Length: 248
Image (cartoon, rainbow, N blue to C red):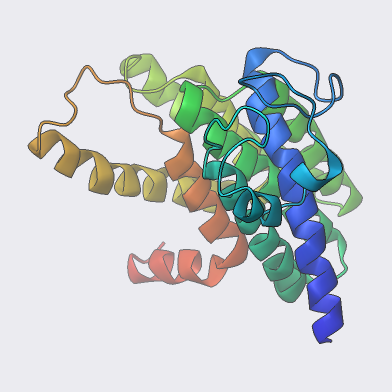
């Protein structure tokens, strides 16, 4: 069993390395295939020993082998997060259609969170295909209506909020919640919205009190929605326990 989990961890680290490529290249409109992996500062093509997830970062002491430019700590962080959720997904769902759906959604959520942190952007090239993929999963499960309803309610509520408060939300957030609704259902999509908003307030309010940011500061909402989505996906009992407390 230990060796099996070790394989899952290694697989997660490798996939996390690929997610780093997506996080860097998608918002820049670059191909995710060509050119091969290279240092973004000196453009030197990376060798095999530069590409081992986490280990290369430690071995190189967080610097490019060729130009000595610091490498962002986010690279190993993304790899480790991906590995953790790869194992967690297996524990939670096993080798099932639900497990495959959860894993695809999880990897997309990781990419979305870090792109939004860097660029204040949730790319259509991620959310729109994911909505289609989610619907295909739902059709496979015989739950097409639930998927469509989840997408319409999840995205529709945030769209209404955006209509009345256009400066507070972006259309990327609307499409994100539609995606979450398709995969998770409308009940958990609402939890994603409310928990994401709550977490956002917990972070933003102290920063405003400390005058680190003000009302005009652009702040990414996507990472908070991602955290809410991961809670709803892996710990759904929390969602329905909260609903139960309020008689919903």
